[in-house]
Length: 104
Image (cartoon, rainbow, N blue to C red; front, side, top):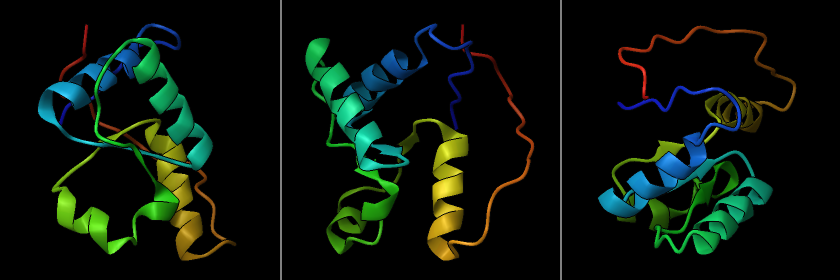
């Protein structure tokens, strides 16, 4: 697993867009607004990425057949969306993450 671990505004999403294009792996995002942002940014940079997927689209059988993995944009937001999809009353209150290498 590769984590793009940089400060806000330092190019994490752009790096992930290039990785998505290079590896032909779609990006999973928390909602359709984030999905449209990724599409617009890729178009602006002339990057040809697979269509991003929102958490709400994960149950679509066509997606399951067409990919074996995802890059995940804004991991905490995606995780919270997944938790809320299971039960709207649940919320993420904290967590941990281990990074094995920092992207520079």
